[in-house]
Structures are given as structure tokens and as C-alpha cells.
Image (cartoon, rainbow, N blue to C red; front, side):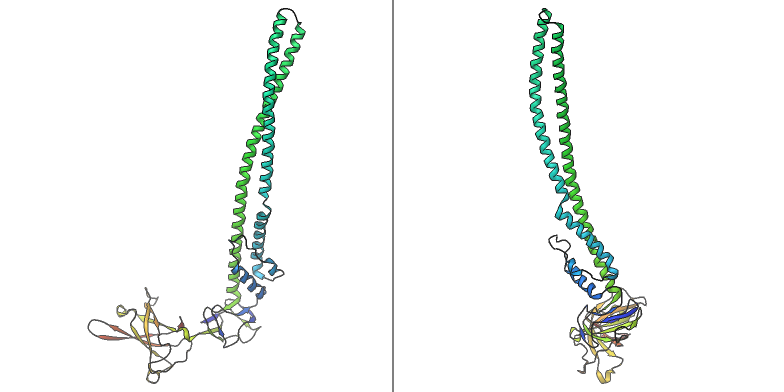
Length: 365
């Protein structure tokens, strides 16, 4: 595997030694940028371990105090803001405070309403008594026992009592309306509380995944990493502070032989119908004459479903014996070893041998 630079700049740090064995996904070097790569690595390790869907787990912002994150800073700040907003809502529960106030108000309204209902019963009894008294006064007035002035005074007292009663009914009606409004407000607060909780949680999750994406983009731009394990070889870099350009082959990774090899074969479409998975393949390497070294033995492991742009089928050749030849000689692995493949095919009549010229690149499985 060749590690190609995706950015131009100065090599800030080389994290491995030439010819050392590195595991898969190892960062080999850092291209200079506005971030402190150690801070970014710390942030990445925290983000990878953090479960945004676990509300009980706190994000350790204190560990990243005074960190230099460069291009990642903006996404980190947005996530921190959304995280703190969600936590404040969870801790303070502002809608619960409002809900408790509404519950208390509802209790008070019901108490006042109960008092007015009792007062209404009393007023109705008083009105009935006053109405009976007026009837008696009218009898006395008709007999000339009391004066018109006394009769009018008694009626005025009754009218004032009726006025007070109607005012009481109006107060009862207003309290009932207030009780309905209180119930609506309580329901609305509950809905708003749920919406706020969902929105804050969604915003935090979105900013968290955006932060992960920005970290990944930073890695792609400014880190040189290997996707396979093997021995690292320095190609166009020798020390820190050296300048590299986009597209430079900076490192090469030679796969660990214990994991096996796969040969890549391009076979022309001619007679390709006879090629099948499992067929034996003899491989002759261009730099290792078969008369002296023998051939590598392999089997077809996979056949591409469609040909490439040149009409060739792409074959994967497994090498059960690795780079050991038919003469029991072990070939030293080199990048992009080329040669030709002889595929042994069968039909109902005889065993044929079809020769295919190809460029063989051995890769780690």
C-alpha cells in the first residue's frame, strides 16, 4: 500500500520509524496545520468513546480546556453550546417550574370557586326571603298600613341584593374561564416541554455527528495513515519540517506475509467462459525466471461480474503457499511484482492451458 499525501505542506511530525512494523490504521505522520494534533487525537479518542444517546454520561470538556483544534474549533464550539443547552434544560427543568406555578394557581382558583359557590347558595336563600318579605309588604301597602316610601325602600333593597347576586354569578363565570385557561396552559407547557427536550436533544446529536465528520475530514487532509498492517518504508520523506505536495507517495506499507497474499489478474474476454472459481493457476514472475525459481501455485478465488473498461475480467488469485514456489524457494516480497498467469481449465474432452498476460499486484488479504 502506498500512502499518498492529500495536502501540501510541511511535515510537522513523523510518528513511526523507517522499516518498523505498524498495525492497521496507524497514523504515520502529520502535515502542518492550525491544530495541535495531540489535542485533536485526544478529542477523537473522547468522541469515539462517547455515546450521545446516553443522557447519564457527561462529556469531559474539562480535559480539552485550552486545546488548539484549528479547523475543528467551530464544530467543537457548536457541539459544546448545544450540549450545555441540553444539560441546562435537563437540570433546571424550566417548564416544570412553570407547571408547578400553574398547578398552584389551579388549586387557588378551585378554592375561590368553591367559596363563591357557597356564597351563591346563601345569596339565593337571602333573595328568596327578601322576595317573600316584599310580597308581605305589598299586602300591607295595599291595605294602607305602610307608606309608598317604605314600600319603595324595601324594593330598592331587593334590587340591590339581585345586583350583588348577578355580580357573584359573573365572578363564578370568570373563575371557571380562568380554570379552563389554566388547564390549557398546563397542557401547552407539557407539549412545549416535550418539544424543547426533543429539539435540544436532536440539535446536540446533530452537532456531535458533525463534529465527528469534521474530525474525519481533518484526518483525511492532514494525517498519513495506513489501512493495513505491515512494514513501513519511507519514500519521499526523511525528516520532520520537510515539505511535501499533494499526490506525493510519502510512505509504502509492505504487508505482513503471515496474513497471506492475493494476486490480481487481468484476463482478456477470449475463452473467459472456461474460467471458474477454484481453478488452479501457475504464476511466473518477470524478475524470477521460472527455470531457476519455479512458479507460484494459486487458485482462482473471485471473478469480477463485469469486465473493466478495456474488456478484461479481473480475477483474484489466492496463494495457499504464499510466496513459496514449486521449487520450494521463497520469493522476497516486492511491491507491484509483475508476471504472467497460466490458468488450468477443464472441459469434457481434455485439459487445456490458456495463457494470460497480466500485471500482478500482490496485496494483503
